[in-house]
Amino acid sequence: MDGLTLIGVSHRRGGIDALETWHERLRPDDVAAHLLAVGVSSWVTIATCNRWDVVLARPPGVDLATVRAALTPSGAHCRPYAYEGEAALEHLTRVAASLESLNPGEDQIMRQVRDAYALARRSGRDDATLAFAFDTALRLAKRVRREVALAPLNTSLFSLARSDLERVLAHGGRALVVGAGEMGELAARALGAMAGVRVSVANRDFDKAERVARAVGGEAIALDDLAATPRDAEVLVAATPVRALVGERVLRAMPSLRLAIDLGVPRTVDQAAAAICDVEVIDVARLQVAGEARRRALVGRLGDAERVVLSGLDEAVGAWNERQLAPSIRAIVDHYLELVGDRLPPAEAERLARAVARVPIKGLRAVAREYGMAAASTFLAETGLHALELESRTRR
Image (cartoon, rainbow, N blue to C red):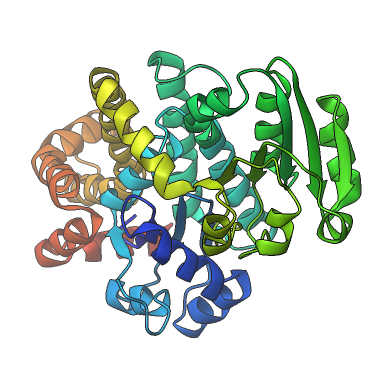
Protein backbone atom coordinates (compact mmCIF):
# COMPACT_ATOMS: atom_id res chain seq x y z
CA MET A 1 0.00 0.00 0.00
CA ASP A 2 3.04 2.30 0.12
CA GLY A 3 2.40 3.28 -3.52
CA LEU A 4 -1.19 4.33 -2.85
CA THR A 5 -1.43 8.06 -3.60
CA LEU A 6 -4.21 10.66 -3.62
CA ILE A 7 -3.77 14.01 -5.39
CA GLY A 8 -6.50 16.63 -5.58
CA VAL A 9 -8.20 19.92 -4.85
CA SER A 10 -11.54 20.58 -3.21
CA HIS A 11 -13.78 23.49 -2.45
CA ARG A 12 -12.69 23.41 1.18
CA ARG A 13 -9.01 23.18 0.19
CA GLY A 14 -8.31 25.29 -2.86
CA GLY A 15 -11.63 27.02 -3.48
CA ILE A 16 -13.88 27.38 -6.49
CA ASP A 17 -11.18 28.90 -8.74
CA ALA A 18 -8.90 25.90 -8.21
CA LEU A 19 -11.78 23.48 -8.79
CA GLU A 20 -12.66 25.19 -12.07
CA THR A 21 -9.03 25.10 -13.19
CA TRP A 22 -8.58 21.38 -12.48
CA HIS A 23 -11.98 20.41 -13.94
CA GLU A 24 -11.44 22.36 -17.15
CA ARG A 25 -7.75 21.73 -17.75
CA LEU A 26 -7.37 18.14 -16.56
CA ARG A 27 -10.17 16.25 -18.25
CA PRO A 28 -10.10 12.42 -18.35
CA ASP A 29 -7.96 12.22 -21.50
CA ASP A 30 -5.48 14.73 -20.05
CA VAL A 31 -5.22 12.77 -16.80
CA ALA A 32 -4.57 9.57 -18.76
CA ALA A 33 -1.88 11.17 -20.92
CA HIS A 34 -0.07 12.79 -17.97
CA LEU A 35 -0.09 9.69 -15.78
CA LEU A 36 0.89 7.25 -18.51
CA ALA A 37 3.77 9.58 -19.40
CA VAL A 38 5.26 9.16 -15.90
CA GLY A 39 4.66 5.40 -15.75
CA VAL A 40 1.37 5.21 -13.81
CA SER A 41 -1.19 2.80 -15.27
CA SER A 42 -3.70 2.39 -12.40
CA TRP A 43 -5.81 5.33 -11.25
CA VAL A 44 -9.34 6.47 -10.38
CA THR A 45 -10.65 10.01 -10.91
CA ILE A 46 -13.33 11.37 -8.56
CA ALA A 47 -14.63 14.62 -10.09
CA THR A 48 -17.66 16.30 -8.50
CA CYS A 49 -18.90 19.85 -7.91
CA ASN A 50 -17.05 19.79 -4.58
CA ARG A 51 -13.76 18.06 -5.45
CA TRP A 52 -11.33 16.79 -8.04
CA ASP A 53 -9.30 13.85 -6.74
CA VAL A 54 -7.18 11.21 -8.43
CA VAL A 55 -6.36 8.06 -6.48
CA LEU A 56 -3.51 6.10 -8.03
CA ALA A 57 -1.02 3.30 -7.46
CA ARG A 58 2.56 4.50 -7.93
CA PRO A 59 4.90 1.84 -9.28
CA PRO A 60 8.42 1.49 -7.82
CA GLY A 61 10.68 4.31 -8.97
CA VAL A 62 7.89 6.90 -9.39
CA ASP A 63 7.91 9.34 -6.47
CA LEU A 64 5.16 11.49 -5.03
CA ALA A 65 6.57 14.75 -6.41
CA THR A 66 6.48 13.36 -9.94
CA VAL A 67 2.79 12.45 -9.93
CA ARG A 68 1.88 15.66 -8.10
CA ALA A 69 3.59 17.68 -10.81
CA ALA A 70 1.91 15.60 -13.53
CA LEU A 71 -1.50 16.42 -12.02
CA THR A 72 -0.91 20.16 -11.59
CA PRO A 73 -2.02 22.34 -14.54
CA SER A 74 0.64 24.75 -15.75
CA GLY A 75 0.15 28.20 -14.27
CA ALA A 76 -2.15 26.94 -11.50
CA HIS A 77 -2.29 29.39 -8.58
CA CYS A 78 -1.99 26.63 -5.96
CA ARG A 79 -0.61 23.12 -5.57
CA PRO A 80 -2.93 20.17 -5.09
CA TYR A 81 -2.88 18.36 -1.77
CA ALA A 82 -1.05 15.04 -1.80
CA TYR A 83 -1.36 11.97 0.41
CA GLU A 84 0.37 8.62 0.24
CA GLY A 85 0.10 5.25 1.96
CA GLU A 86 -2.20 5.08 4.96
CA ALA A 87 -2.83 8.84 4.81
CA ALA A 88 -4.20 8.44 1.27
CA LEU A 89 -6.44 5.58 2.40
CA GLU A 90 -7.72 7.64 5.34
CA HIS A 91 -8.52 10.64 3.14
CA LEU A 92 -10.31 8.49 0.55
CA THR A 93 -12.37 6.92 3.33
CA ARG A 94 -13.26 10.33 4.76
CA VAL A 95 -14.36 11.44 1.29
CA ALA A 96 -16.53 8.34 0.74
CA ALA A 97 -18.07 8.73 4.20
CA SER A 98 -18.99 12.40 3.40
CA LEU A 99 -16.78 13.72 6.21
CA GLU A 100 -15.00 15.93 3.67
CA SER A 101 -18.23 17.07 1.97
CA LEU A 102 -19.52 20.64 2.09
CA ASN A 103 -22.72 19.16 3.53
CA PRO A 104 -21.63 16.37 5.94
CA GLY A 105 -23.78 13.27 5.64
CA GLU A 106 -24.85 13.90 2.04
CA ASP A 107 -25.79 10.77 0.10
CA GLN A 108 -24.27 11.38 -3.33
CA ILE A 109 -20.55 11.12 -2.63
CA MET A 110 -20.53 7.42 -1.73
CA ARG A 111 -22.26 6.60 -5.03
CA GLN A 112 -19.88 8.90 -6.89
CA VAL A 113 -16.84 7.17 -5.36
CA ARG A 114 -18.28 3.74 -6.14
CA ASP A 115 -19.11 4.73 -9.73
CA ALA A 116 -15.66 6.25 -10.27
CA TYR A 117 -13.98 3.02 -9.19
CA ALA A 118 -16.37 0.92 -11.30
CA LEU A 119 -15.43 3.01 -14.35
CA ALA A 120 -11.72 2.48 -13.65
CA ARG A 121 -12.27 -1.27 -13.38
CA ARG A 122 -14.17 -1.38 -16.68
CA SER A 123 -11.34 0.60 -18.28
CA GLY A 124 -8.67 -1.80 -16.98
CA ARG A 125 -7.12 0.83 -14.69
CA ASP A 126 -7.41 -0.96 -11.35
CA ASP A 127 -4.98 -3.16 -9.43
CA ALA A 128 -4.79 -4.92 -6.07
CA THR A 129 -3.81 -1.76 -4.19
CA LEU A 130 -6.71 0.28 -5.56
CA ALA A 131 -9.12 -2.62 -5.03
CA PHE A 132 -8.14 -2.77 -1.36
CA ALA A 133 -8.35 1.02 -0.96
CA PHE A 134 -11.79 1.43 -2.52
CA ASP A 135 -13.26 -1.70 -0.95
CA THR A 136 -12.09 -0.45 2.45
CA ALA A 137 -13.29 3.12 1.92
CA LEU A 138 -16.74 2.12 0.70
CA ARG A 139 -17.19 -0.51 3.41
CA LEU A 140 -16.33 1.99 6.14
CA ALA A 141 -18.50 4.68 4.53
CA LYS A 142 -21.47 2.29 4.75
CA ARG A 143 -20.60 1.58 8.37
CA VAL A 144 -20.55 5.32 9.17
CA ARG A 145 -23.93 5.79 7.51
CA ARG A 146 -25.34 2.82 9.43
CA GLU A 147 -23.95 3.74 12.85
CA VAL A 148 -23.90 7.57 12.91
CA ALA A 149 -26.93 9.77 12.12
CA LEU A 150 -25.24 12.63 10.26
CA ALA A 151 -28.16 13.64 8.01
CA PRO A 152 -31.59 12.51 6.80
CA LEU A 153 -31.93 10.35 3.69
CA ASN A 154 -31.48 12.19 0.36
CA THR A 155 -29.43 15.01 1.89
CA SER A 156 -27.31 16.72 -0.76
CA LEU A 157 -25.35 19.88 -1.43
CA PHE A 158 -28.57 21.34 -2.81
CA SER A 159 -30.22 20.79 0.60
CA LEU A 160 -28.11 23.67 1.97
CA ALA A 161 -30.18 26.09 -0.15
CA ARG A 162 -33.49 24.96 1.34
CA SER A 163 -34.07 28.05 3.50
CA ASP A 164 -33.40 30.37 0.54
CA LEU A 165 -35.82 28.42 -1.64
CA GLU A 166 -38.52 28.59 1.00
CA ARG A 167 -38.00 32.34 1.24
CA VAL A 168 -38.57 32.85 -2.49
CA LEU A 169 -41.16 30.11 -3.05
CA ALA A 170 -43.10 30.48 0.18
CA HIS A 171 -46.36 30.82 -1.77
CA GLY A 172 -45.46 28.55 -4.67
CA GLY A 173 -44.14 29.59 -8.07
CA ARG A 174 -42.05 28.33 -10.94
CA ALA A 175 -38.62 26.71 -10.89
CA LEU A 176 -36.36 25.93 -13.83
CA VAL A 177 -33.70 23.23 -13.41
CA VAL A 178 -30.91 23.24 -16.01
CA GLY A 179 -29.33 19.79 -16.09
CA ALA A 180 -30.85 16.34 -15.62
CA GLY A 181 -27.93 14.49 -14.09
CA GLU A 182 -27.86 13.25 -10.50
CA MET A 183 -27.75 16.70 -8.91
CA GLY A 184 -30.33 18.11 -11.33
CA GLU A 185 -32.70 15.24 -10.58
CA LEU A 186 -32.27 15.72 -6.83
CA ALA A 187 -33.01 19.43 -7.19
CA ALA A 188 -36.07 18.76 -9.35
CA ARG A 189 -37.45 16.25 -6.86
CA ALA A 190 -36.87 18.61 -3.91
CA LEU A 191 -38.55 21.49 -5.74
CA GLY A 192 -41.41 19.29 -6.93
CA ALA A 193 -42.14 18.31 -3.33
CA MET A 194 -42.67 21.97 -2.33
CA ALA A 195 -46.29 23.10 -2.23
CA GLY A 196 -47.44 25.00 -5.31
CA VAL A 197 -44.08 24.82 -7.14
CA ARG A 198 -44.16 23.99 -10.87
CA VAL A 199 -40.90 22.55 -12.20
CA SER A 200 -39.37 22.67 -15.67
CA VAL A 201 -36.27 20.64 -16.55
CA ALA A 202 -33.93 21.61 -19.38
CA ASN A 203 -31.22 19.29 -20.65
CA ARG A 204 -29.19 18.70 -23.81
CA ASP A 205 -30.45 15.10 -23.88
CA PHE A 206 -34.22 15.66 -24.09
CA ASP A 207 -35.03 12.07 -23.09
CA LYS A 208 -33.27 12.60 -19.75
CA ALA A 209 -35.09 15.89 -19.23
CA GLU A 210 -38.38 14.19 -19.97
CA ARG A 211 -37.67 11.34 -17.54
CA VAL A 212 -36.84 13.71 -14.67
CA ALA A 213 -39.72 16.08 -15.47
CA ARG A 214 -42.21 13.24 -15.62
CA ALA A 215 -41.15 12.08 -12.14
CA VAL A 216 -42.08 15.48 -10.66
CA GLY A 217 -45.08 16.27 -12.86
CA GLY A 218 -43.16 19.00 -14.66
CA GLU A 219 -42.25 20.15 -18.15
CA ALA A 220 -39.24 18.93 -20.16
CA ILE A 221 -37.31 21.38 -22.34
CA ALA A 222 -34.52 20.76 -24.83
CA LEU A 223 -31.51 22.89 -23.91
CA ASP A 224 -31.34 24.39 -27.41
CA ASP A 225 -34.99 25.45 -27.11
CA LEU A 226 -34.23 27.10 -23.77
CA ALA A 227 -31.48 29.15 -25.37
CA ALA A 228 -33.85 30.25 -28.15
CA THR A 229 -36.93 30.91 -25.98
CA PRO A 230 -36.10 31.01 -22.24
CA ARG A 231 -38.87 30.09 -19.76
CA ASP A 232 -39.70 32.53 -17.00
CA ALA A 233 -39.42 31.36 -13.38
CA GLU A 234 -38.83 32.72 -9.91
CA VAL A 235 -36.00 30.24 -9.23
CA LEU A 236 -33.34 28.79 -11.51
CA VAL A 237 -31.13 25.87 -10.51
CA ALA A 238 -28.04 25.31 -12.66
CA ALA A 239 -26.75 21.75 -12.30
CA THR A 240 -24.61 21.32 -15.39
CA PRO A 241 -20.85 22.01 -15.74
CA VAL A 242 -20.90 24.51 -18.63
CA ARG A 243 -19.24 27.84 -17.94
CA ALA A 244 -21.59 30.87 -18.23
CA LEU A 245 -24.29 28.88 -20.03
CA VAL A 246 -26.87 31.10 -18.35
CA GLY A 247 -25.89 34.57 -19.50
CA GLU A 248 -27.46 37.99 -19.75
CA ARG A 249 -29.80 37.19 -22.66
CA VAL A 250 -31.33 34.22 -20.82
CA LEU A 251 -31.57 36.16 -17.55
CA ARG A 252 -33.25 39.17 -19.20
CA ALA A 253 -35.83 36.82 -20.72
CA MET A 254 -36.81 35.71 -17.18
CA PRO A 255 -38.26 38.91 -15.64
CA SER A 256 -39.67 37.06 -12.60
CA LEU A 257 -36.32 35.46 -11.71
CA ARG A 258 -35.22 36.30 -8.16
CA LEU A 259 -32.84 33.49 -7.19
CA ALA A 260 -30.31 31.39 -9.11
CA ILE A 261 -28.65 28.44 -7.39
CA ASP A 262 -25.48 27.56 -9.28
CA LEU A 263 -24.18 24.06 -8.55
CA GLY A 264 -21.99 23.89 -11.65
CA VAL A 265 -18.22 23.58 -11.70
CA PRO A 266 -17.23 25.53 -13.70
CA ARG A 267 -19.91 28.07 -12.75
CA THR A 268 -22.92 27.97 -15.06
CA VAL A 269 -24.48 31.35 -14.23
CA ASP A 270 -22.67 34.47 -15.45
CA GLN A 271 -22.40 36.35 -12.17
CA ALA A 272 -21.77 39.73 -13.77
CA ALA A 273 -24.92 39.33 -15.87
CA ALA A 274 -26.86 38.24 -12.78
CA ALA A 275 -25.78 41.40 -10.96
CA ILE A 276 -26.94 43.53 -13.91
CA CYS A 277 -30.30 41.75 -13.91
CA ASP A 278 -30.64 42.02 -10.11
CA VAL A 279 -30.73 38.23 -9.62
CA GLU A 280 -29.37 36.81 -6.39
CA VAL A 281 -26.86 34.00 -7.05
CA ILE A 282 -26.06 31.28 -4.54
CA ASP A 283 -23.05 29.34 -5.80
CA VAL A 284 -21.00 26.60 -4.16
CA ALA A 285 -18.98 29.23 -2.26
CA ARG A 286 -22.18 30.56 -0.65
CA LEU A 287 -23.35 27.04 0.14
CA GLN A 288 -20.05 26.38 1.88
CA VAL A 289 -20.98 28.93 4.54
CA ALA A 290 -24.18 27.02 5.32
CA GLY A 291 -22.22 23.77 5.25
CA GLU A 292 -19.72 25.03 7.83
CA ALA A 293 -22.60 26.01 10.11
CA ARG A 294 -23.97 22.45 9.84
CA ARG A 295 -20.50 21.09 10.52
CA ARG A 296 -20.28 23.09 13.76
CA ALA A 297 -23.72 21.86 14.83
CA LEU A 298 -22.70 18.25 14.12
CA VAL A 299 -19.34 18.33 15.88
CA GLY A 300 -20.25 15.53 18.32
CA ARG A 301 -21.61 13.19 15.66
CA LEU A 302 -18.71 13.95 13.35
CA GLY A 303 -16.40 12.89 16.18
CA ASP A 304 -18.31 9.60 16.42
CA ALA A 305 -17.93 9.12 12.66
CA GLU A 306 -14.18 9.84 12.89
CA ARG A 307 -13.80 7.14 15.52
CA VAL A 308 -15.64 4.62 13.34
CA VAL A 309 -13.35 5.46 10.42
CA LEU A 310 -10.10 5.28 12.40
CA SER A 311 -10.92 2.01 14.16
CA GLY A 312 -11.98 0.46 10.85
CA LEU A 313 -8.81 1.66 9.15
CA ASP A 314 -6.63 0.14 11.87
CA GLU A 315 -8.30 -3.24 11.31
CA ALA A 316 -8.11 -3.00 7.52
CA VAL A 317 -4.46 -1.92 7.41
CA GLY A 318 -3.53 -4.66 9.89
CA ALA A 319 -5.22 -7.28 7.70
CA TRP A 320 -3.52 -5.87 4.57
CA ASN A 321 -0.09 -5.95 6.22
CA GLU A 322 -0.67 -9.50 7.41
CA ARG A 323 -1.45 -10.64 3.85
CA GLN A 324 1.65 -8.90 2.53
CA LEU A 325 3.84 -10.38 5.27
CA ALA A 326 2.48 -13.92 4.94
CA PRO A 327 5.20 -15.17 2.49
CA SER A 328 7.97 -13.75 4.69
CA ILE A 329 6.47 -15.25 7.86
CA ARG A 330 6.20 -18.62 6.16
CA ALA A 331 9.81 -18.35 4.96
CA ILE A 332 11.05 -17.61 8.50
CA VAL A 333 9.21 -20.65 9.89
CA ASP A 334 10.51 -22.82 7.02
CA HIS A 335 14.05 -21.66 7.81
CA TYR A 336 13.82 -22.89 11.41
CA LEU A 337 12.13 -26.09 10.27
CA GLU A 338 15.10 -26.74 8.01
CA LEU A 339 17.48 -26.22 10.94
CA VAL A 340 15.57 -28.77 13.01
CA GLY A 341 15.62 -31.17 10.08
CA ASP A 342 14.26 -34.65 10.82
CA ARG A 343 15.41 -34.71 14.44
CA LEU A 344 11.81 -34.35 15.63
CA PRO A 345 8.42 -35.60 14.41
CA PRO A 346 6.86 -33.13 11.90
CA ALA A 347 4.21 -31.73 14.26
CA GLU A 348 6.73 -31.11 17.06
CA ALA A 349 9.23 -29.62 14.59
CA GLU A 350 6.55 -27.19 13.34
CA ARG A 351 5.69 -26.11 16.90
CA LEU A 352 9.35 -25.57 17.78
CA ALA A 353 10.03 -23.64 14.56
CA ARG A 354 7.06 -21.33 15.21
CA ALA A 355 8.13 -20.78 18.81
CA VAL A 356 11.69 -19.82 17.81
CA ALA A 357 10.39 -17.65 14.92
CA ARG A 358 7.99 -15.75 17.20
CA VAL A 359 10.47 -12.97 18.08
CA PRO A 360 11.56 -12.01 14.52
CA ILE A 361 7.96 -12.34 13.29
CA LYS A 362 6.74 -10.10 16.12
CA GLY A 363 9.41 -7.54 15.22
CA LEU A 364 8.48 -7.70 11.54
CA ARG A 365 4.79 -7.08 12.31
CA ALA A 366 5.65 -4.18 14.62
CA VAL A 367 7.78 -2.48 11.97
CA ALA A 368 5.03 -2.89 9.35
CA ARG A 369 2.38 -1.58 11.74
CA GLU A 370 4.33 1.47 12.90
CA TYR A 371 6.30 2.43 9.79
CA GLY A 372 4.66 0.73 6.79
CA MET A 373 5.55 -2.07 4.43
CA ALA A 374 8.50 -0.23 2.91
CA ALA A 375 10.16 -0.18 6.34
CA ALA A 376 9.24 -3.85 6.81
CA SER A 377 10.98 -4.67 3.51
CA THR A 378 14.09 -2.85 4.73
CA PHE A 379 13.93 -4.81 7.99
CA LEU A 380 13.77 -8.07 6.01
CA ALA A 381 16.70 -7.10 3.82
CA GLU A 382 18.93 -5.90 6.70
CA THR A 383 18.33 -9.05 8.76
CA GLY A 384 18.79 -11.41 5.82
CA LEU A 385 15.19 -12.60 6.10
CA HIS A 386 14.37 -11.41 2.59
CA ALA A 387 16.85 -13.90 1.21
CA LEU A 388 15.06 -16.65 3.15
CA GLU A 389 11.77 -15.66 1.51
CA LEU A 390 13.34 -15.84 -1.96
CA GLU A 391 14.81 -19.25 -1.19
CA SER A 392 11.46 -20.48 0.10
CA ARG A 393 9.70 -19.32 -3.08
CA THR A 394 12.36 -21.01 -5.23
CA ARG A 395 11.88 -24.31 -3.43
CA ARG A 396 8.11 -24.09 -3.84
